[in-house]
Image (cartoon, rainbow, N blue to C red; front, top):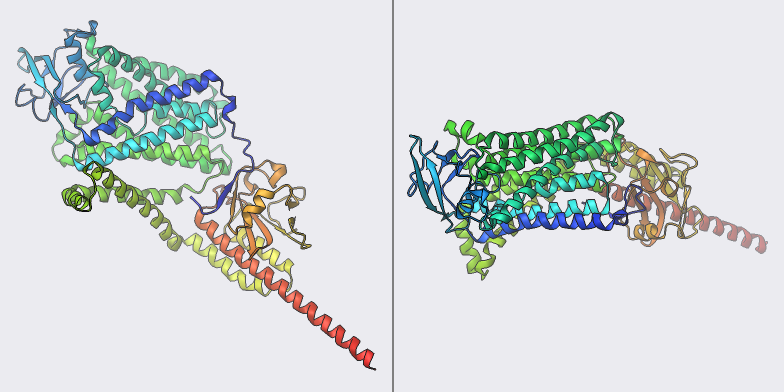
Length: 631
């Protein structure tokens, strides 16, 4: 995020993977592999089509959406017809009737896909009460360009989210990161239609997967609640101790409800159970958001900024996930919202749901950043960037939907192989999103009033520094200028006072530093830091122990900036985060680098002036001595 390099001076909050036992590592790896096996097969849908029967039914077997062939043309199905569950075919899992039912009810019901050419025979009870057997053969269901684009981004985001959640649990083992990994295992932007479509031909495997899915969903909700209780330091306040035990109970209940919802293939109408499981899960997720909100008021300023990232991630991701998931897994929206008749078709098309899952990925990304970084920039800085990215993706998707064929023709005329046509579209979308993200921050540099006032304040001090009577005045400007302009929690200056290469003494002008805090930087103890600073760029400092870098808590230094001219390092300024707890963002880092570069020029000017004065004095003495000798 920043041009400044990062130096980890030691993070006491970070525990390494060595604290994980062998069986814990094995469970983490198995969890990652299983989660990837579920979502990665949906990459197939980018190039190949799955099939549908042209209708959707709830877990009572009631058909609520008849959208096309073969349901209309062959089966003559209508809304309100019902699949007879009384046959209970999956008491014999290897039978064809069981496979036929699993093609409809496998997974979670609602929107379903099967392999093209799949044929099923279903006992249908018509609205009139007549019972008939209907045989349907799935027709391929091609996805539109808009849906394909968002599906590809969903799948890429799912792999990234799963890997980052896994790395957090691996590198920082604890209940907090393990809980988030359990949540990410199932609740990620990826889709699972291709995997379940393949499993429908293997009833025993599909029934096993449904059991694993139930456990994953229950564990995911419980894990998210535990994460909310323990973030950011893997511990919670005494008043919330009881909720950790409640999280396990709620997770078990939701897992059992989800498992029970799959018993419709055993003859049990389970729509009310399914709704209870799904809506109960949403309730737990929203309650976790409320817990994070309540706990944010109990945190230090630095941790409050980290929790703000989680809150914003939840505020964006949870509603988007609930909207997309409830549309695909339940009949609630079709029955009580979309049937009002005045919604455009694209509003409740699959492309909208895929975009909802993509927004859900923001939740995971924000949480990963908040866990990974002990100090973090103000969330508004990145929200503006993410807003630009999402707007760019939507505009590109609309353009892609409109100009899909001309763009393909342009790529083919340029010699792009047909297999790479769609990846080229995705690559362009990602590139446009990246450019929008960077452009937003560039515009932020011009439109951010607080940054403008801070940089203007520092610029006004530069002439004073260059015309200072002595270096002590420059020291004061180098510390107080940024401290006041950016409203920092601390600022200190280490200067080479005796021209001894590699030893920098802390000047008495420090703000927010105690007398007994670190007094000097030396080539022996700070070799890596000084080498990085000698390149002329700022260096991020991360959560060093108190006796290594200075003050603790809010005032702990977060950034070291050199005052350097050519290869001469005159001083090192160390700045803490803002007094509100948020870290210095990349735009502010650039301003501080520019300011300290001018301070370096001021030191050089002061040094040259001092040398000129010494030469002038020596000349006067030499002239006086020559005159005395002549007389």
